[in-house]
Image (cartoon, rainbow, N blue to C red):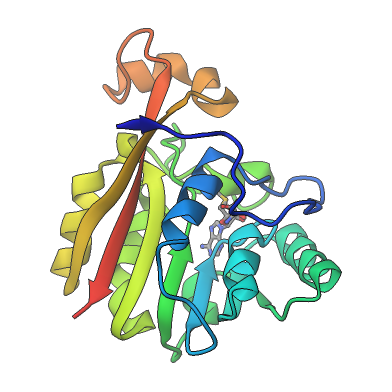
Length: 228
Ligand SMILES: C[S@@+](CC[C@H](N)C(=O)[O-])C[C@H]1O[C@@H](n2cnc3c(N)ncnc32)[C@H](O)[C@@H]1O
């Protein structure tokens, strides 16, 4: 397992973020690195689920892909639109839940860094910055929906790239995608220091058996799945 660099040349520089919008972090950069190994171009119709600042969507658009991005947060949608305009890159940014906003459409590539941090509350937050990371007690509330929906969103041979914490179960994601009919594997693993959100819920995570005592490093995984 590698420790990933906390800065990377693969993401667009100088992005703005309105208050409450998830700033590109280690997970964003890790997914950008995975994306740089994919064959992208004008022939690629891509979707980013949960775009935040638009960093990943703009990375793909900068390589010629035709990109649609979706986010439940209006602040994120406005941020991504501003960042696209400032960089003069074409990006279609939709507001709402990814499943509702993409009904009937299919893509060659889906990118996603979804909310994945296990949280004590059973339900998902309906507002606030926490919407970017809180994902229910096992961290899988959004991941499982994406796994179930992926086959309907991908064209034949289309690829899904998803980053999440090993804490919510890489094998569960691979199995979920396989059950949905995709061929899936863990494409990359990295280890990053715990951030403030994990540190703030350390006692709860330890009680749930999701973290060992004094653990300070989190495994990130990139899952790559292909529509057969
Ligand atoms: C971890 S952040 C990732 C942001 C950005 N892609 C990045 O990597 O820096 C997750 C994003 O998903 C959005 N989100 C959460 N639930 C969603 C849903 N059901 N449909 C669309 N977007 C969602 C959040 O608002 C947030 O912007």
